[in-house]
Amino acid sequence: METKKNQKFTQSITFKALTVVVLTLLLLIPKAMITGLIEEREKRSKETVRAINEKWSNAQTICGPVISVPYSVKIVEYEKSKTGTSEKVSYQRQWFSLMPSTLRIDAKLLPEPKHYGIYKTVLYKSELDISGSFDNLDEFEDYEGNNTKHWNEAYITIGITDLKGLVSNAEFSINGKAYAADAQGSNSWFEGNTLKIQLKNFQKSPNGKNEFRCTMTLNGSSDINFIPVGRTTDVSVSGRWGAPSFIGNFSPESEIGKVDFTAKWHILHFNRNIPEAWDGTQIYFADSQFGVQLIETVDHYQQNLRSAKYALMFIALTFMVFFFVEVLTKKKIHIIQYLLVGIALILFYSLLLSISEQIGFALAYLIASLATIGLISAYVYSIFKSSKQTSLFTLILCILYIFLYVILQLEDLALLIGSVVLFAILGTIMFLSRKINWYKDGE
Image (cartoon, rainbow, N blue to C red):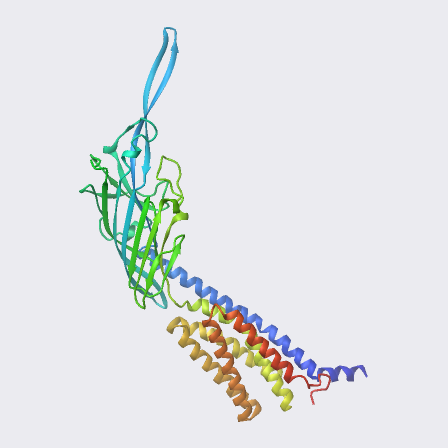
């Protein structure tokens, strides 16, 4: 008697439904493998792009110019002896650094997308025109007391992240006099390399306006950043790129066209936490930097990952359609046939990844979805031998893949639209299953 009950349960609709659920969950294992493959390919892509960028030049950050001036500190020591107290005087050399009063930077970017096999990165050439003035040199004559300042030994420092990107010598002039620039390496206040311009025999301007100018051609990749060291900093960046991203702690006034953009920043000294002058103490500038990132409008790896997150929904809905067709038409579908359809649904993501690396995501999605729908539809026809049922099943698959593509394009509304559609699907399933006798056997 117990055996007959067990046989009856294994032939029931409930048992078949539970088997389909278990199979759906088991298919999450190959789905996880596909997700791991996407992440691995994305990591390899980033490593390749990083290697390309390092050969050309890395992302650049411009800091400066900053003027550094040595001063002598008088140190008096008193020594006692048998004959009395004697005075010993010595001088210690120290340095202070001073920001410019005004800083203007005009940067023109010439982006150059580069391909290495199937991988792509964005490199750029930039024409930089840096100008401004040190109107505050006299104000800091008494910096650190009445110690002697050695203005003839002063030097200018300009921070540049990767000096490999310098195409030509930086041409620097102050008060109409030209000075040569040499590579200095890193220092205590800039995380990167620096140019050092030694101001030999420097004389301050009689009118107090020590105007400077520097022009250079600089290569870089991905993004270009600036640090607002001036008491007043104005930065203008323009380039032929239709999808810039403005990064950092300051937002610009910008105009973005289909193929070019312009952006302007106006930053005052109280907008950032940088002192106008400092001695040898550590100064941290990273919190104040800003700039432009040249990004690709479509990252197919991210879209592949997002699409793979919907794999469970695709498998579950497809199996559910199979199940209801089986129940309503009384056409037996073996669990192996469910498995083969599930594998086809999983392979869609592998197809999508491999093709999108070659021709982009949109066209790859169209090809992979048509191939998957065609394969499953042909297999369904071989099972049901009915054009009507096959057409209905094909229509449902087309709706699912169109729905997924729309969700991938609407990032901000993806959760809302997805939740509403899934709720509607659940309501439809509940309506269609309201008269099913879950206790009857397969016959």
